[in-house]
Image (cartoon, rainbow, N blue to C red):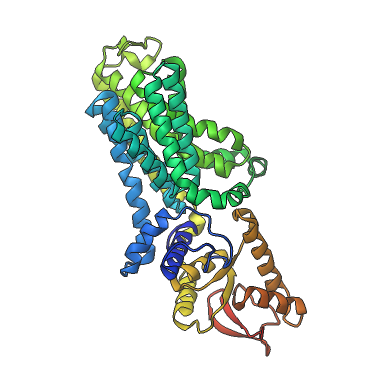
Length: 471
């Protein structure tokens, strides 16, 4: 079973694309009738193998994993351009053992990983000056914007910082080329974002606030950042030190822009950890590039100097080449162990293989005779919609839903779950939401075994009840 509900949401959206032969204006399976605002490129790609019969749960994870692995390629290219093949290989090695990109795999941030791969390609294109590279950069902006809206903000910030650096260096020609590519890409994206602009502006940040997180304990708060970033977080801090202590070389300005962009964007969201943490994801790959570049120069250089950077104040500068390689091996061992620990412990509350959820999902897929909406707890609701293609309204903590229309439907569903059928309110809400089934987690209310409702199926703690309202 996939960890988290995000992979299931991607599958539901892919099902909606298949059922509607395109991206619908409103959802037909996930909170039916609510507006579709999520950029659809990842879901479109996901829908293609599913059409030809690929197993959905395995397919969505494999696709996310593929984009995660592919990001090592542009990182290798950037490292090689900054310091030769050795830097490229060390960057790839650090990326392989770093946990900051493993963590999104544990909760299903697959569009995020796809967009991160595209951002890495965009940064490679920022290092090039040919006109074709500018057109390719515009194309990358379009693809990023159609994959993940937060990533679009990140790549725009990266390009703006890079343009500012170029103008500061009196390189106005190349600065204007990058600016033109960004304007071209954003102009193409207006077809998707302008009609939905009001909805994007109304999005509600999900997850706990920073004060709410701190109220659970400072250890838990710090632990969240450690399990999220691990080695990558340490390298982000190290990169800040290198930038402040040593002026970066001219060729490194795209990587520097990549590093600073998400950090600056995270500042306004410091009190909303769910957003600020996701923005910090984007700062770890360039930190790997910077660290690999500095590390390679330490290994290659005399003990007193590293490519014209004075390092006498650094104690490890006096180490021999063999000692530096030994430190690198220790880093590899630490990073590998930390990554394994992170992936093993992240979101373990989702990782129980619950056969009861699969049982009610199979029942819904094979026996679901009625049309209409199913109300269910969050996780089984997502499985029912993703596997059986039945409309659902998920009941869960409203803090994890970003649209007000979703939160209103959650509140309406809660009223149905807590109101006896003899009450007119029950019938009104059932008819308004076109509810035909309710899934209870745990004991069913005392009013279920009567003439209005009847138990259709039960497995473990889950009970599916038919709602026989004449609307």
